Length: 188
Image (cartoon, rainbow, N blue to C red; front, side):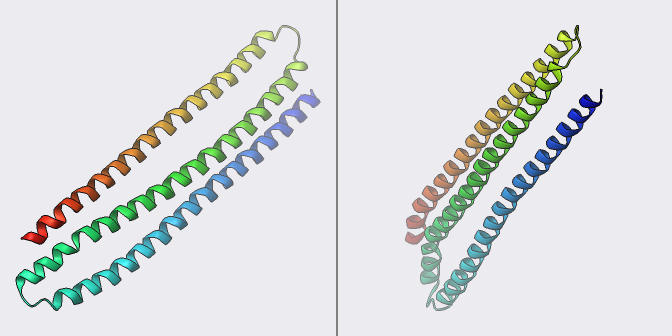
């Protein structure tokens, strides 16, 4: 009896340590992604302020309303391109974090699964006669949980890929619309 308690205690400690390591690794990935997004936002804000000041100076030098509107229209395309570039960078950061997060989570899940399987195998070797059904149910539950996790991971990955593709499509459509609108606005 003591060996079962020691086995469970040891296994519980190993699983808890694995869970803590997983949480730490995943938290680090989120923090890294957040740092990159913040750096991108700071750079974009700085560039935007500099461009706005330069554009305001340029607008203030306009000699008539026609030149003022022409200068304003000329900024539509670069502003759209800047926004599209920002969105691409942000999408790249999100995709990188998602990929690292998925890879880290999968590695820790695989490690935890192998530890649980080893625990179940060790316990079932010493299981009393007549407990075969309980052992089979336990193994089946672990297999079902693993299959459920793998399906959830696959579905989540597909959903994120679809969202990323839609963001890219919207960004490209926005850029295209800005490119078409800029010459029309300049003619007015």
